[in-house]
Length: 66
Image 1 (cartoon, rainbow, N blue to C red):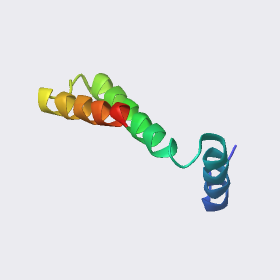
Image 2: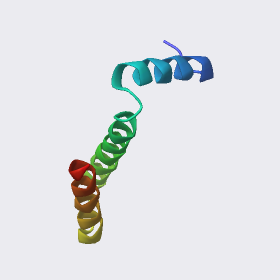
Image 3: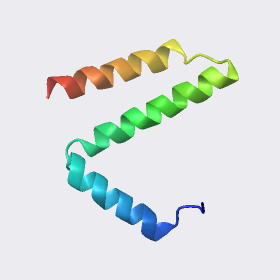
Image 4: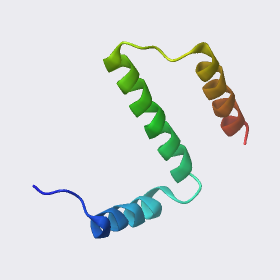
């Protein structure tokens, strides 16, 4: 199985846009990025700093109040 090229990534992006819609897509991307950061931090043995945790909770509170 080969790597994903630009045409494949564009097709995946269009399908994701159609399935989730333009309002939900940024939230999903942010959640995926946070999950990857947490996973990498757990693998390296480092925990996120308390400042980063409070920043993330503030973002979540703002997005849930909309």
